[in-house]
View: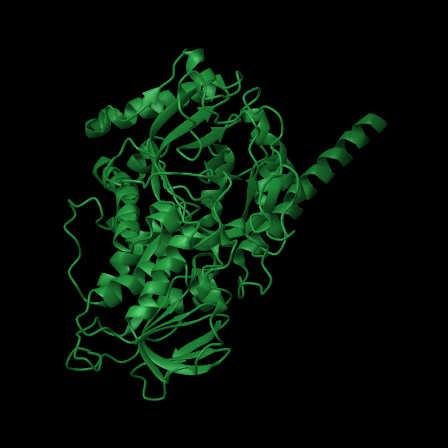
Length: 570
């Protein structure tokens, strides 16, 4: 009888623990994310800070802007660039940033431009149909060329380190590897135009050795990919826009605290920490924090804290061997260590010093780069390694503990401990001895960075979409819980006589950790909506997929708990 009672007590406590954990999670995903905290963990991407952060204090806030953009990351910058560069007489545009410039997810991510395609295709096709799935994959893939083109046009190839790389998806579990190969074949059967762009290692263990990967890797699938320095690309673009357009103003450390209708009900009244201004259009480019000012988006875009590190490579890694050149800075990896394809870690590498040639974005097989040490300190080949959300796929609770969390001033000890040890294991024995600390004082951050393998560790907040797709377009009442300004007649125009869409709020957010392959072109598409320009031809790869457009119907159907249940069941 005692044994029975003990078993019942165990079952009771287990069920209670599950119930309590669910209640805590449900509360977190429903809460107001608030404003970004004032003291985030230091991202290595922002070493050193952009000259934009050395500007004198903000000028007085203007009384009026045609468009106010909230957020200074990749999305907000794409919107600003498109609005300003598309007009002969530029609009009056104000960008508000709660903290330093590009201090959110864009300046804290992994630097990948490597979209999920074959991994997601069957699920997306099952939900939206094959034609829509193919359009979504094309849109993701289009970001590689689009971002390289932007870096070229902005003369930022050197500063941004934008380049094509060879992307390797490495699977440690044979069953997962077989599943991935089946997924690839299904993807290529549906999309034959992409055949020939992937290499499957199969049973060729010598290929693993050439990549210096651990013998525990079951196999890999390679494909063209890209990498860049996201912080320097975005701050470089913003610097050019500020210099070129007096009508564009950037206000850092100026959070937007409230949005309402102006007294005349013809525009928005926007409250900030520096005062109040009015605008006919408000763009929400705040991703994980979007639901602070759009309360209807709670449980539609949910913050999730993720982690990144900058690490010194082992001495043997990426060295030139057997007549082959060093691959440092020319490869990117995604590692799948567990039994779920949802548990993965990701790796890019800063170019080493010195690098001698300029990347040619038109040469898809090249990964050549040249450092911008005249502008920034030369990189030292740091490995930019992130992930660990499920601790190698063995701890879904580790991920759930970071769902609904917006505190990026702290890092999760278990996750950073995992990241600090996993990388050497992935390349054992190719890693070699630990790398020596030989950087200059500037490279070391004047003592701010760790002296061991892990140079820096930080966290960032992604915006997880309740249905897995970004939310882009005019914000409906169900999301804003606010009336729109009255529609003027004739159609609205700014002082320079530019016709715009009717006044409103707009959003591009909820990229679910894949902002580098969604956000730029989503921002471009959103700006075109504000400008009341026709949508792109759907046959264009860069055309915004209709499944991304925010509508009341989609808003009603999006279910975050169902989405999270699917994550746990994979």
